[in-house]
Length: 131
Image 1 (cartoon, one colour):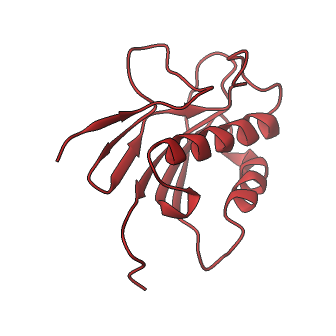
Image 2 (cartoon, rainbow, N blue to C red):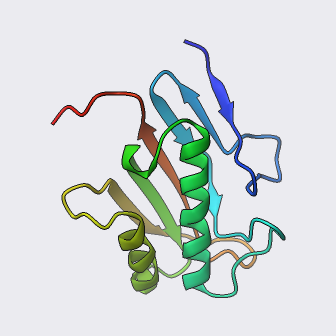
């Protein structure tokens, strides 16, 4: 199997790394923040950063050949974990079906600059539904 770097329009890292990597049916993302795709600036509020972050997640998994339905695990880091209501609102928009959501682990972290939230994900694409 060959490893393939995944890039998504409107999202990039400052370092020379891709947004995600795919090998076989697995996609692993790098760190994804709530930045504006045009300016690269962080959203003004936690709610906006969560919206932007999930928009990037969708674009990145789609650039890898998958969809939000293929994500099996997300890890989220928040400056203030007590403000999960903003994260949960964006989460429910992305994954509205309680019977079809990925696992999630949310942790508090000392995030740099204006960053209030960031995440990464693991997705499995191209497999038949095993259920």
